[in-house]
Image 1: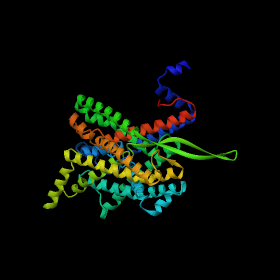
Image 2 (image 1 turned 120 degrees about the vertical axis):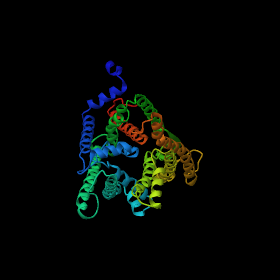
Image 3 (image 1 turned 45 degrees about the vertical axis):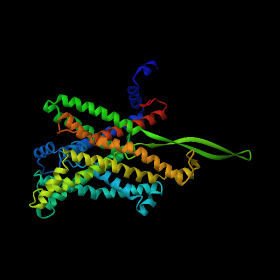
Image 4 (image 1 turned 90 degrees about the horizontal axis):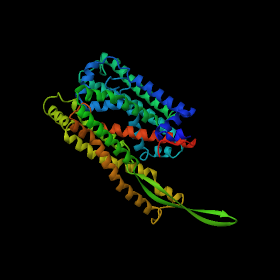
Length: 438
């Protein structure tokens, strides 16, 4: 027992996890699925000039940032180049459609069967989104001279269809792996897949960005910025405002009715929106430059306008990051309010006999919640916007633009790590073991 107490808490928790047969099996299953993911990420789409593709990613900071999320699969144009992001896009679209479309809203209120049906629709939506995104990537690479035989006419049709179907199949395979991890492993499978891709690509990114260029001072600054960003993310991810709530209930004992009251609290997170505003803002910032790249070689006004748009939305331009900052703030408020309205906390409290001390139930309580969430969302919005522009700050501080510190990637990594640790913590506490978190 004394030897157990002398060990560091984290080390002892890991030993406890592997000493329990079912938890050990879940952890090893998760690691096995990640190994399969990494194997799939190295299966390339046929007909690609890999040397030219790598050179393009080294020259384009935005593509390098996107490659970080795919775990290097995009750099090799693997069948898993799109990762699980078409599925995430479909999930976000469904979240926004549920409160708007009456049929979807009715499905969401049908319990487990309704949620399964919405999940099925999300999977069906993922397939055309993956095919559309895959075709868009192939067209972009064709315009850069990286790949040929891409088009929808003549002899290019069959090779293009084969590549698009292979990339869509790779995405759906990764979604399936993620769901297997959720069912039989530890943590949220889709998040674990993204986490694995980001972690796997970091060593190569650091090697090409700093070590290959003897930028050891830049590497030191990069590490310090990374640690500061992680601490910053953990603080705001776990920060919340506690709203005190009291419940009044009646009990019948001995033929008499007694009124009892209990008190608890509702935690309102400062960063309710998570990383979704970053994804929304990044998608919008990428779109104009991508469209303009198709018209850059045009003559006259169209070509000049396309070049101007590309300069404005250049990832190395200050104006790009100013727009990015403002978009993240706006989307944070939008997404937080949409999600908060769906929860209907005031009605749920009133239905269960709960109330906020000093606030009348019903509409006054709803107005109070809206006031509180609006104020604390400013903290979450400024936090996400600051995290969003850290890549620009890191690039200027280290003077190495090949690798930019992906704050979105760090946000995903920290969030997934905290969520997985909490799940392991709950499993250990159920078995009367000490967990990771004190």
